[in-house]
Structure formats: C-alpha cells, structure tokens
Length: 145
Picture (cartoon, rainbow, N blue to C red):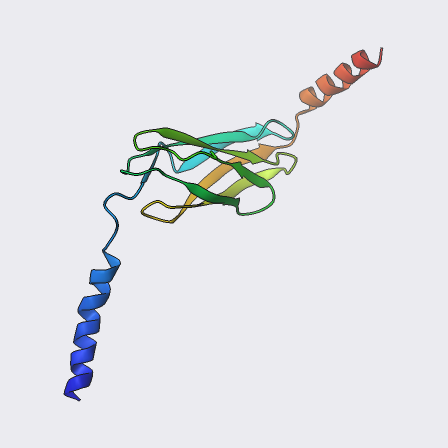
C-alpha cells in the first residue's frame, strides 16, 4: 500500500515537470493575426488572404505541413526556413464559388515550440448581384464581337 501511494505521489509531481520542458532555443510563431476575416465577398471573386508571422525564436523555423480543414481551403506556405527575427507568410485561397458563411481552419505543423498550430479563416460569400451579372453578360457580348 505504501508503495502504491509513493508511486502515485511521484507520478503527480513528475508529469507536470516533464510537460513544462521546452527548448529555449526553439523557433516560435508570432502571428500578426491568428484569425483572418474575408468580410463579405462576392461569389467567384478572388478569395485569397494572407497570414503574416514572425519567427521570434532563436533557431530557424521550418514548416513541414499546412492543411486546410476541407478541400475548399487551400493554403500555401514558405518552402525555405524562416530565420530568427524574419517574417513569413501563409496564403490561403478559398473557393468562392461556394455561397454562404466561411468558417474554416488551417493547421500548421512545424519544428516550433508548439509543433501544431491552428489558425482560422472567416467570412461570407454572397451571391452575385444582378448588377455584376449584367456586367459579366455585357463583357462577354463585347468579347464576342
């Protein structure tokens, strides 16, 4: 019984100790914004937003994988390491052919102090207005002539 209590006490103190160890020289993300809002955009418009970040750590930041929460959200990321103090950018293209509310997430996997970070994309894709449909129709008629 004493051994069981001793093992439990050691476990209680050991787990938090291990959980708090991070490499002080590890790269670190600092995003200008962790949630980007497209606002209200029209259907079939260019749906691209950028997340700017700085490596505030003490070693190069290497992004190994960036994924969107669905196929309608396509991220692109720097291929080269981001050196300490340097800025980087992650661009996200959203398929604006889909009308409605945008609420998606982007997961970034890297060698940073937090190996996996999630950022958000929000907004609203509204249907094309009658005026923009008329402008498209007029443009296509002019191109046919």
